[in-house]
Image 1 (spheres, rainbow, N blue to C red):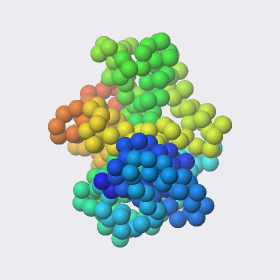
Image 2: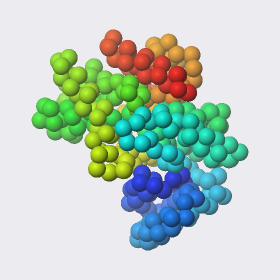
Image 3: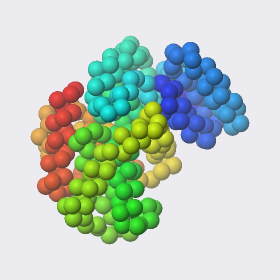
Image 4: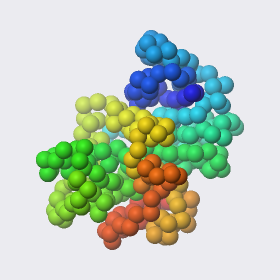
Length: 295
């Protein structure tokens, strides 16, 4: 298997380390920063334990890759919106992928923010002919799950929930599809408001003591890879191209990417058509409108 990672900063490096646990594939890291030489050598040492080969800036391997992880780009300054770096990262997408030929069987997994838009822009470069997913609200779903488990003193592995829409200010918790031991859960309006406030502050709290959110986004990218490889059977919220069902429900005509429930539990893998409550549809519409505004 051929895998390429664009960007070997904090997230790209953490993702590479997670991938090395599997071993037995070729990993190509694309990053022009010469100061990464030590990090690349360190990863190559780790890779040698399982027989994985790591190359650095081998453009020929990009065209052969079955999986391409996009972790490159500018990070938003602390306390600022992810959308402040949107145009810089849009330009980088064009610089990297315009004129690049990928395998028709390639899958691109996007981590770079604003992730819903970056996934859309990469897909557009290839006229939507290449499969592209963004990590989207998968990290927000993990965070909400943590919050609910702490709130109710529940075991995490018995709790299922979803956050959909946008990985940003209009992320939408889906309480109508939150289950503990397969039983539906109810939350007061006050509890929902408190959970959502905490949910939106996670990244800010993390960045108070470290430069970026690292391990959560890297693990989300790995989880998508594992699901696509059949190692995880679950429904994950992924940033993907809007489907006719959601286009109609959200009154959207633009070909946007947003986070939708994607099932790996049935064949074929696909976006699930979920019925939501009125408040959840309103949140989803706000997310879609925000993404349309910034595309």
